[in-house]
Image 1 (cartoon, protein in one colour):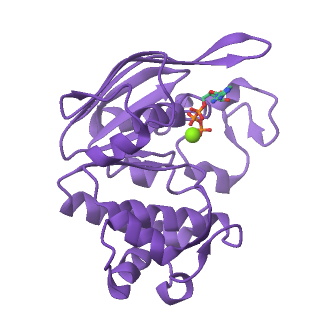
Image 2: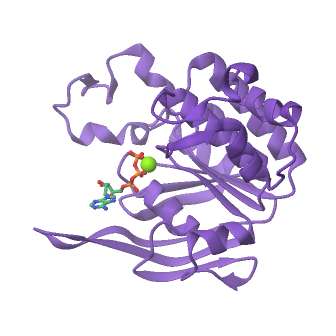
Length: 264
Ligand SMILES: Nc1ncnc2c1ncn2[C@@H]1O[C@H](COP(=O)(O)OP(=O)(O)OP(=O)(O)O)[C@@H](O)[C@H]1O
Ligand SMILES: [Mg+2]
């Protein structure tokens, strides 16, 4: 369904000149698969997702979607082909209500309140409190994130990309979010790409891709890749900054118990 071939993405920095963010990434998202991209902070995961969605234009390489070269296509053209993207930090839309956004996303101007509420409840929001809220700065970060996930669910795209859907979502809703992803996985005939640091999301992946320093460090079936990520020193690569506050350098892990939930 999606093939990323030798993707490279550089940005122009005033002082440093061209800075390489993605050096050379090739990966595949087969039809109907649930692919989880993981890896340390700053590795290039969001940049890769933005290149796939058309937010960033890659410096080199090729992106094929259902056999078609989409590398130079705009976000809108890609969306029309069936690619949806939920940002790590969602965008706010002043003057637009949640209901409008869900209607737009579903492509159904006559979407019923009941159907819209169903999408909101899947992301743990009490629909009647939110359906007529404006998608503006009055929403909390977690609320906004959940609303954006609901719009991607409503789009029912061939390829849905979620950048850290768990970020800012409380624990109770996180459990429901996992259930929502499990449900999509069972029901959809499209493919899903999730960028995540969470073990529970990695556990429901078909394929895991590990991105580190702009390169693919590993990719393959979950059962092959996951054991290598859990409980090894590679699980906390940020320890390279050995004197970081909150890190137990001897054990190469966070001192704080609560911070140990993630893989990266
Ligand atoms: N426009 C830009 N200008 C300069 N540097 C950038 C730009 N965009 C991204 N970067 C840098 O590129 C690297 C990769 O960023 P990216 O957001 O893709 O990482 P990530 O893997 O998604 O990290 P995280 O897990 O923290 O979300 C980071 O070091 C980031 O600071
Ligand atoms: Mg990111």
